[in-house]
Length: 242
Ligand code: IPE
Ligand code: IPE
Ligand code: MG
Image (tube, rainbow, N blue to C red):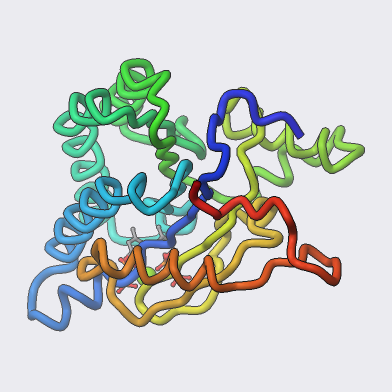
């Protein structure tokens, strides 16, 4: 499978299901939106330290298709936070070589979010240090169903899936998938790409997640033995940092 636009030799693709914002707020007697604000700060911390941990692609679950089931106020607050992040951080992304992309449906997002997303993607295009993929109004099942119609080989299918995400090439498979807040499920995230991902579940609530937690997860990942269905560890382990 070609990975021409990804440029991550020797670096890993990590994915994070950032869960536990609501519980974080509840434990402090705060509204859920305060948890989401704290979660946005945790997100910024993790993005900053990801390249130093050998991560070349970071895919984060920011808003699932099923999250539309939440109260309108909470959904609006989440999109406001997303828009604030994109407006505030785009210069820093450019300066730090971070290429930003959104995956998922855009037709149901607030117009202002769609606008700043497109502008951020355009401005950060070509960032070679980290590709940051933000899954918004995302459903892995939907993307798979959209790609399935004409697929024949796994390669062709991966290309169709990339097209369904609006990406030019299929991303590398996920090497490490982290979920916070003690939950142990995928919640419709990256079902295809995580086929051989090493799973890391941590009880830490997302707003408390920081550089040390990311390092611990990556260290644990590097200790794992990945055989991809064979009997010996793969010689080309993607996660080894040169
Ligand atoms: C994750 O935190 C953020 C989103 C799903 C948008 P939650 O809001 O799911 O937090 P909990 O699971 O209620 O604690
Ligand atoms: C998954 O978390 C979605 C995101 C983190 C954006 P949820 O909190 O929505 O998932 P469930 O309901 O626990 O499966
Ligand atoms: Mg949750």
